Image 1 (cartoon, rainbow, N blue to C red):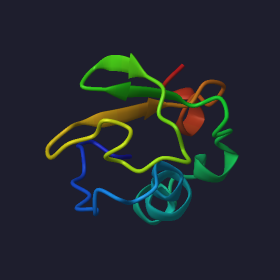
Image 2: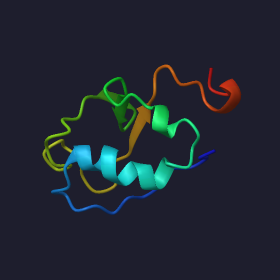
Image 3: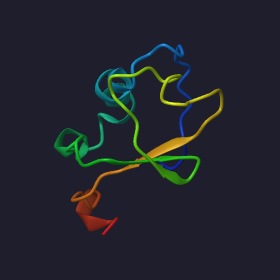
Amino acid sequence: MFASPVCLPLPPDTLFGALAQGVLPGVYGEHPDFAKIDWSQVEWFKSGQPWTPDPAKSLQANGLQHKDAIRFRTPGLTGIQGTCS
C-alpha cells in the first residue's frame, strides 16, 4: 500500500512517542492493519540498523538528525491478505 518513504518535517524536540501515536496514524492510518499494531512489539530500524528508541525522549535525544531514515516492522501482522508473510 505504501511503496515509498515519506518525509516528516518535525521539530527536533518532538517526543518519539508523539511520532508513533500522534503523527504516524495520520500517515499510515488508512492501512487496514494499522489499528492492529502492537506498538510494544514494533521493531525499529535507523538507517537499516536495529534501533530501540525511547518514546519518552525527543527525536533529537533519540539520536535522530536531519535526513535520518527510520523504518518499523510489525511482528504478527502479515499485510493485506498475507502479502508480507
